[in-house]
Length: 118
Image: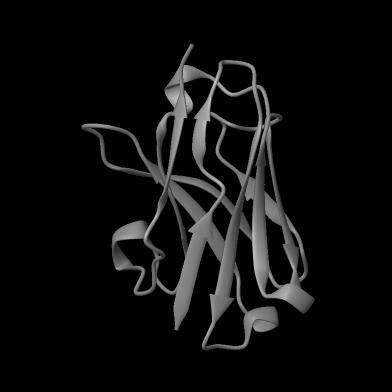
C-alpha cells in the first residue's frame, strides 16, 4: 500500500491550493480516504473524509472552504482548499481510515507542507 501526497506550498491568506493523494497497492474504489493535518507543535487533526460512494464529511474548521473529491480512474483523492487562513498552515496527510481514530490508522502518506502566510 502506498499513498503519495503532493500540491502543497506557500500561499497568501485568501489563496487556494489543491492537494492530491495518489494511491496504489489496494482496491482504491473500495476504500474511503481521509485527509488529516498536523500544525506546528500540535497533534493530528482530522480534516475530511470521502467514502466509496463519493459522499464526504468535513471538520467544522474547514467546512465551506475545502472540498474533497475522488477520481477512481486515477486512484486519486483531491483536497481543494480555498480561502486559506494562516491557521491552515500544517503538514497535510492522506490515510486509509482502517481504525476508529487517527492514531489507529495503519497506512499514511509522507505528507505535504502547506504554509499560509503573507
